[in-house]
Length: 429
Ligand code: S3P
Image (cartoon, rainbow, N blue to C red; front, side, top):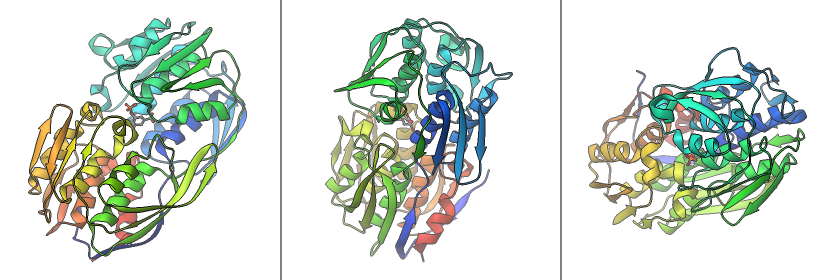
C-alpha cells in the first residue's frame, strides 16, 4: 500500500494545465468507436478509468492507434462491434460500466462487464431497471444490482423515463441504448446533470434534442467520425483551485479548463464562499466551453450548499469539504445523498478524515455540517481507495500545521496520473 506525505506549503504559485476531462474522454472513445469513419481525439485523459473504456472497445474489434498525442479511432458504425471473447473489466470506473451497459444492451451479441472490488459494490439497478423497460436482457449479482453484469443483446424500443436522481451516467446509458432503439428515447431528471453526452451526440450528428431537464434521441441514425479536442477537467482543476485558496499568498493560473455550465458548480460555490477565482479568455472547443482560471488565496466563509448546485459539483465535494474545513463559520451540505454511492461513501470518508484533522463535523444522511477551523492538524489519513479522497487530503496537507500522510494513493491514477508531481511543482515550502 503506497502512501504519500505532503509538507505544509509556504506558497502555491505558477501556471499549470490539468489533464483532459474524464467524462468527455470516455464519451469520445465510445462515440468514435460506433461512428462511421475516423475520429481523432487530442487531449485525451490517459488515466486508468479511460484506459478501461479503450480496452473494452479494442476487445470488440475497434482499431485504435495512439501516437502519444492523438488517438486515432477507426469507427465501426452502429452495428460493427464484435462480440468480446472475454469479460470486459471496467476497473474502478462507474462511467465505463454504466455507459457500456446501455451501449451493449442493443448489440447483436453477448457480453459481460465487471470491475474492481469498489465498483462491484456500486448500484447498477439504476441503469438496468430502465434499460429493462426498453427490452434489454441484463443479469447481475444481488438480483441485478451488482456487477458482474451479463448482457444478452436484444432489439430495443424507446421509452420516456423520469430518472429519480440527477445522474449523467443514467441519462447517458439510456441515450446510448436509444441510438439502437426503435423510435424515441427520452430521459428527464430532477436537476440537469452534466450534458457532455448530449453535446457530443449532436457533434457526431445524432438525432438528438435537449429538453429543459433532459434529452430525447431517435434511434437508427448512423454517427459520423469527428475531430475532438478534450478540454482540461474542471474536477481535476478543483484540487488546485482549493490549494491556491487555502495557502496564504498563493496565486495560480490554470489554463484550458472546461467550463460547461453543468460542471461549474465548484466555481459558484467557491465564489460564494468568498474565493477569488477569475474566468479568463472564454472560448469554445469541440462544442464545449473552455476558459483559463486565475485563483488567488482568499479568506473563505461557510455557506449552505444544496439543490441544483449538487449535480453541478458532484465530484468536487471531497475537496470542497477541505475548503469548508478552513472557512470561517459553518458549511452545510444537503441534498447530496449520491455522495454515499461514489467510489466510496464520500460523506463518511471525508468526515472521518476531517475529524482526525481536528475539524468538528456532523454527518447527515444526505450531507454534512463542517465547522471551519484556523488550521488543520497533520497526521495520517486514508484514501479509502478513492482517488478524490486521496487528492483532497493531500491538498489539505498543504495548509496543515504539520506533515500529512495519505495511505493508499495508487488510486489517484484512475483520474489524474500526474497529480503528485504537479502538486510538488506548484507548492513550495
Ligand atoms: C459522470 C457522472 C457522475 C460523476 C462521475 C462521472 C459521467 O456520476 O460522479 O464521476 O461521466 O457521466 P453520476 O451520474 O452517478 O452522478
